Length: 580
Image (tube, rainbow, N blue to C red; front, side, top):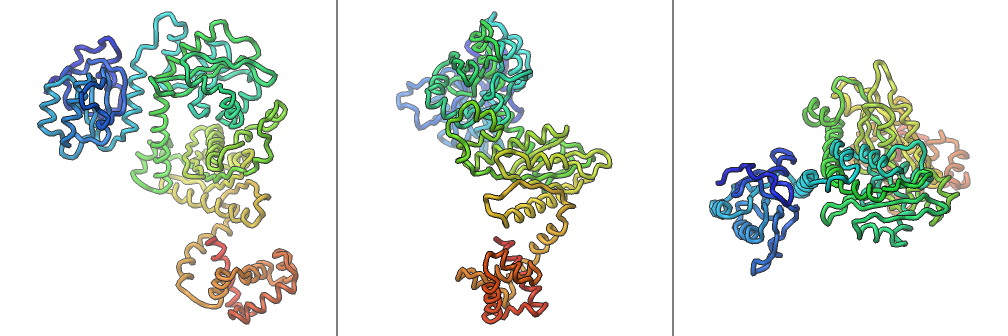
């Protein structure tokens, strides 16, 4: 096996294999054989399908790191893959490390060739390996020729510091900067004393370009021009918007995002176009880092939060991963989001007057329900981060879980955040806060309490017509009776299903025939036997209700003059509503 030296680091043509491997997480890849050492230059990192190799071996992969999905180092085809890559001039091949390790024949081919053989450990996913290698390649690549003003300023930033990048680029171009991903979501923006126009304000508040504006730019051909060129694309000013310059940020053929510069009431700097070109090159490692490490770190942190709330794993280590302080009291807040389906309330192509008055909620226009709900969760997470230092949030489906740190002796640290959560425009949010957990072991109980509050608020809303649904928030001690009832029903439900009797017969008849005996009995019980009030709640005549109650007694034996039957009917009908 050849020695793994760095004697040839820095060869022309790109960063060396050793430099790239030095920037990824230790243990992600193992160097099995490196016949030319680790100083070989690398041009790019690509996925490789052995089935696409030409029979005559004329394909080229000079300087590439090839990730070969589906091939283990112990498999017979590994030898052919490595030979083909070596003929094509690949810098390295990455195969999956199986339980048996590399075969002797593979090691012999590797030692005799020029292509390094690397192995991916089983616990690492191909997507993550690809992202980490591309991030390392982008970070190692030269930023551009000397003298391209601003490169030093951008190069001095911490890798992945997108807000710092936006502020630095804003100084270079003399305007307001937003950094967006390929889906027009805002990753970062420069801080300004005043915003250039309402469009930028909407974009920042909603954390994405409004959907109607995306459709407008797509229909005009602007996005086609932006994604098909490496140069700056100009969007002239009109009576609605300030002038904008945009440029795609690319890593090889992959589009990582875009930089947008908006004039802030004065013309952009004379060298704005050149500065934006330079910034786009310098932004590559930052966006690549964000794409790979940012998402992975977020997933890991959210998984740690959920583990704490479920009482899984080592609490102290999990708390460190989640970013919370052991020994500090926290309350758990749970918010469940539902985007308001009011698309008809918004004009399809709004004018200036319209979008100045909508506020952040305008971003929900045209977004499918699930996407719109995720936007609501984004806003809630942003509110939580701004509410108090140390708040940690994690989402799950349509819910956001927030750990809110409490000051010494503070009994209700999430109170103000509850009020804020129910004020998200164009949405219905149910938010509940559990009691303060004195230590990590009490977090699951606080979470369960907060979830039960959300259930209570949703059940309350379920009694109203959909058009009247509004956001609601409460702390656990404000709905103690209702949450206690939910817990009782949760535990009684399995037992009730094993029993039989008059109430069971009545509810089964309702399910089969679509009758309303159960609803009539429930309304009568909820109104404490006031027939007139119960009939009003059901929107039927009092005589109709009396008839239904009489028939319920005749058909099923549900005699509401019997206290025991009344109790069982109340429990059974509540369980039926509870199940729905």
